[in-house]
Image 1: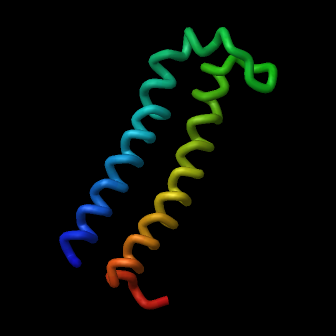
Image 2 (image 1 turned 180 degrees about the horizontal axis):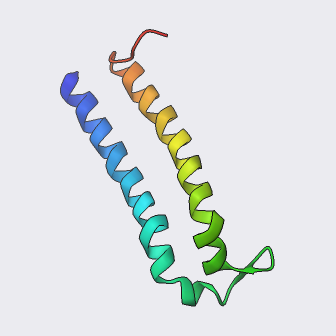
Image 3 (image 1 turned 30 degrees about the horizontal axis):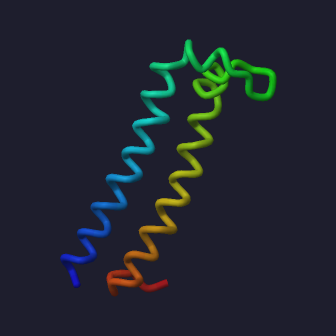
Amino acid sequence: MREAHWNRTRNLMIIHLSIWFVFAYLVHWFAPQLNEIRFMHFPLGYYMAAQGSLFAFVIQLFIFVKQQDKVDRECGMAEED
């Protein structure tokens, strides 16, 4: 059970780090190309650098906590509430 918990935790972490990499680096590397697209009357590259990536990080954090808690509970590794 401990190994299953670790495998699921590792896979979840890899998925979330991949998503984090997209918003932390790829969006900013391709900002000039994204600026050709408008979002709420702002160039998308500018918007993502100013606010969009931060929103994505916060939302991702809450999703990660919920998913990790589910993994912990299913594997019997959860802390008492």
